[in-house]
Image 1 (cartoon, rainbow, N blue to C red):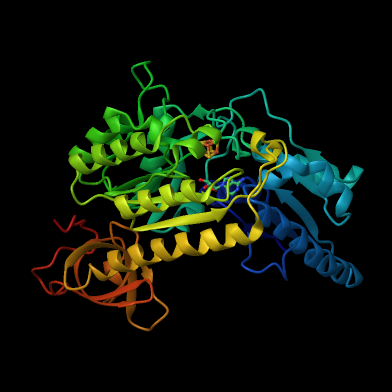
Image 2: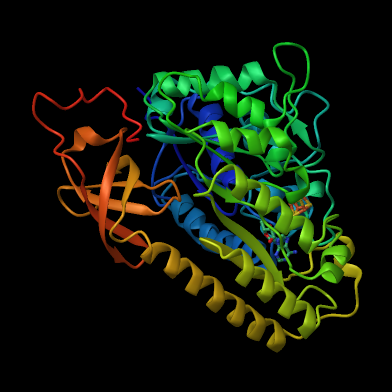
Length: 466
Ligand code: 5AD
Ligand code: SF4
């Protein structure tokens, strides 16, 4: 019998790419491929790329250089290795990839992963293939159902795409061009996915979309449902104990979302709400369509609904024309909000975006210096947030055995990793943990109550820990 062909996917960038990688695995396992953890023994290597910042796309070319050497070596041993470039660099620079790297067999944009088998077949018989068209068919309609094994491999926590693309056109961002117009999946499809995941042991769902709170998928009543309503419905599905969503836009924070945070214990009080800058002048140049005060008000609405809510954000420093005064406004906003964590990036001009045309740039030295100051402030807030957990008892959803023998690791409501010594049957349960220590970003603690013996719930029972 033929050996199954081995497939390795390396994903860069956002959660959407992590999810898309799973979709590609689903498509290709139905064609007889098996996944392998290492690129070295793979017959098919897929680079699932990110185009959001310059560094991200440069990494792709250096990775391809390494893969080319491996491919040539394998060919000398009589083994054929195929290389696929997927993701947003493929979408944006497909022709350029084909031109720059002859070792690439297939270039495929995020809208066309369902065509991977045909593209690979084409590459084999006719030579290299490129597909980066936006399809006319439903973006979400064509994907195969993942196998039970594939779902089980997803463990306790899983992403589910509910929305793709973006209509906001922030002037620095490639997403509206690489991922296309904003589209929402219908409610019933999402509910079916979540039920199937829950039946296979998944306990936490993170709904993802480039602008997830713009969600307005068709409900079973024929009317569009906002994200808050969808979350409320998903919270009733047996087995689902935690819900999250990412990434949100401050303008699309509607009452349904605020009410969901007020009413749903399963909805975790941790919101990734990017603001990019604290200066109204820069926000206007970014075409964010909101002011710093609009953002502050959005944060206040969440806080009023759920007092224990915490925030993370994204920031860009050195946007064209950003003055020291603009940057000071960003620091002031960060100081005022106080984040549990945040990502900050140096602005990088993306070809084809309006901001790339602005001539008034910020020097590399100034950008470095501002990034350093911002990161220091964010780090100090993150450390304070993590330290504050010490001595408290928090709910942890346990996910897997940790590297240290006998330890199990899970996550708090705020996605902090938390380690305890415990038997593996706590995996999949939410249990209260007394936090005793912090090691870098990980919390260390002990289970609040003994978990064995006749009094304790059966391993399959779910506790919300409340
Ligand atoms: N330069 C730097 N950072 C960027 N981001 C998006 N585009 C750019 C760019 N051109 C950042 C934003 C966004 C995050 C995903 O990446 O902060 O929220
Ligand atoms: Fe990009 Fe702005 Fe859309 Fe976010 S909201 S994906 S930053 S265009």
